[in-house]
Length: 169
Image (cartoon, rainbow, N blue to C red; front, side, top):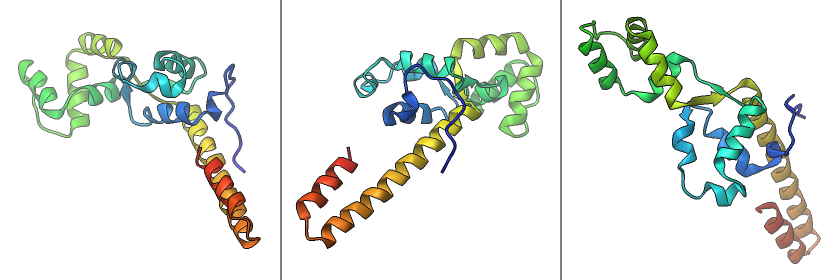
C-alpha cells in the first residue's frame, strides 16, 4: 500500500476528492488568479477555492513555478517572439530557448510579470498526495466491485445495489 505523504494538515484535505481534484489542476502550471475566479468550486469544496489554495501552499503541496515555467505558461509563442522583436533580439529557437532569451534581456521586468501572475505548480509532496489519494480510491473501487459481485452471487440484489450506490458517492 502507498505511504501517506509526509505533510502536516489541520483539515484532512488529502482525503477530500474535491480538494484533490483542485490540487490536480496544478499538476501543470496554473495561475492562482485564474483559479480563484472559477465559478462553482466553492460549493463543491464547501469553502472558497482561495482558502483551499492557501492551505495547499501552507502545507507545501503548491509551490511557485520557476520564472521560465511561469513565462512559458503565461505567454504563447507569438507573444514571446513579439517581446523579443520589440527588444530587437533573435526570435529563432524553441519556446523554452526564447523564454530564456527574454529573461536574460529583461530579468527585472519578467520577474515582476511572474510575481503578479501567481503561477504555481504541485510540489513533490502535492504530487504524492494526489497519488496517495488515487491509490486509496482505486483500492476502494476494487473492494466495492468485489462486494457487489459477492452480494449478487448470494442473490442479494438490494445489497449489491446499495453497495454500488455507496461506492459511487
